[in-house]
Image (cartoon, rainbow, N blue to C red):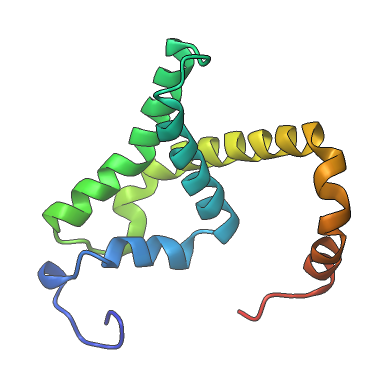
Length: 132
């Protein structure tokens, strides 16, 4: 079963793997990982970042995304969930941690500009529960 329909394993759509990752991994991990991959590719053209640092982040981003992209394009038979792609989760976690550190550094440097605007959001985020 996928998306409410009975689909044979070799005929799974390209969206099966991203949907599976979105359902089984924490949203915070996915969001931070996407932010880190985006920032990595944006930083490739910058001259103030060393080539070594760019290379490290590019390798991490490719390790986390390239196997998934290849599987989405080639559409191999995917049995038993994400266990065939469990090796991409550690690079995703590293990228998420780096993105979190970047975010905390940005918040520390720009504390005066964002602090008054985020009080209502912070209060609602702490008091409300998600409706999963």
